[in-house]
Image (cartoon, rainbow, N blue to C red; front, side, top):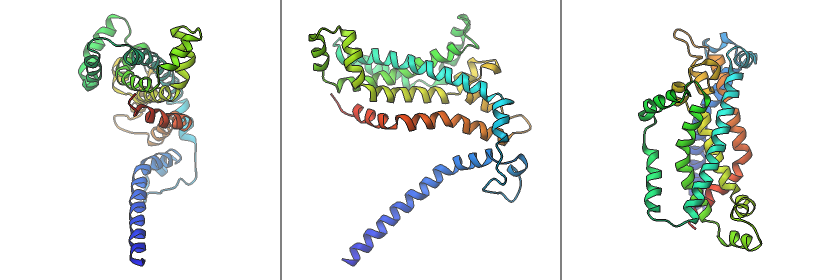
Length: 280
């Protein structure tokens, strides 16, 4: 009995010790970024290294927000991410509903082709996209990256929404139609509330992917006034010097919306992903 207890204690210790090390390894970069953002410029590069800011200063945040232009980058990213998120959710809902509720020839082939577009490297289509947007006078416009993000996000999210909708019985919509609802009313007032966890998952994926995207924003946006946060962060790195304090402060600013979004919809995301794992 004692031997079994010792083995169980050793197993629990080894498991949690390993998980603790993994957690420290994962969180340390975020901790170091936060600490760097709260240090004075002289403290950041001094030796020996200090692991706590002394004294704490918020000057890096003030300079990054006002002088380095992060207030403008932040508002640009919010606009681009929200609009692309809304367009992605609308298109994914329509496409997912059609795939889940309607029967047509080559539907399985269409889904495979739809998912196959996700294997195309982004860098491979930058040139044709750039030429197309140039002809449409959309270079240096936020709409160029909004349309690009939406097109890239819809295939995966439409397939995911297809699985969500298939997991909901069609009898709910049929009962609503018997009560006098049109097809659109049954979708909006009956199906959509049940689909909220799935919509939350798709929304979070679309928003975070748009918020973090760098390559298309760098290639299609030429004016510093229209930069998004990832591009703005890269511009703080000069040819001969790097302002580590403002770079760290900008990184923390960029993290805040993502953290707040996850904190708000984490329950819906978990239930949504679980819902998507059920084959209807």
